[in-house]
Length: 326
Image 1: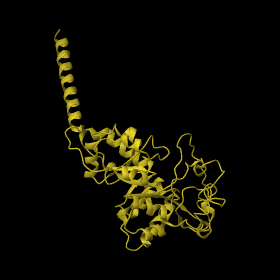
Image 2 (image 1 turned 45 degrees about the horizontal axis):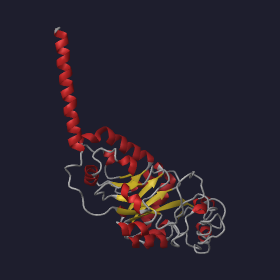
Image 3 (image 1 turned 90 degrees about the horizontal axis):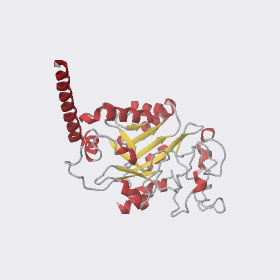
């Protein structure tokens, strides 16, 4: 009898503790009592102003240049005009890709093969930068299965180097995708940054291969990086500890890319979470869908997925279309 009473008493205490813990967890993470921020989301333009294509049924080696939508503009991804156009539309950050060439230059190009988008053949790694400059980077784009090629002849000589981008836009912000891997690749990136005069390294951020971005971070601790390893570490740590209001070190002074469908499960989402990230200088970028194929907020209906008052960054392939809507 006495033991039964003790068990009942313990159960009541345990229930009370659990209830108080739930109340604390809710009160510490709800955005109900936060003032809704004013202002619009900030634009991160994927590959500048680029041609777009359907994301359904893509594979890692899909030739996306061969399945573009009918062009609404003549800009070609990863070129200086496409970057300038994105900034002119209102993008705060432009993303572009880097590949290492045979002569150890850093070419601004997405694919490891040149066959899909250009009139050349072979791997970027097996060609010199001079050879790459002679290619037409608009050669392979078609919206009708190869009947017409609307950008052919308009991209001759438009492939540039990392150094040339930095020289052309010394005061702009960039997110640089390190497409090749390894610490050696990262060191080549570091060399270019160090050799560029009057450059504010804080305007640069990097993502991609973990060894490569880690090498850049080692040389420039102030830059923001992202790799699958850093993202997993940050999100797991925040999932375990964020309910208390504590922000783990792995979530500080970095960048977090989240598909909008999963962001809702973050502690404090949306407003309190964003306030926490702002307090530790962490950039939050939302991507559409599951984030597997760089889906962007490219249409008016896509913007309806954003929570009220969201003022972080959104990933888009159509800065020209989205900026006026914001």
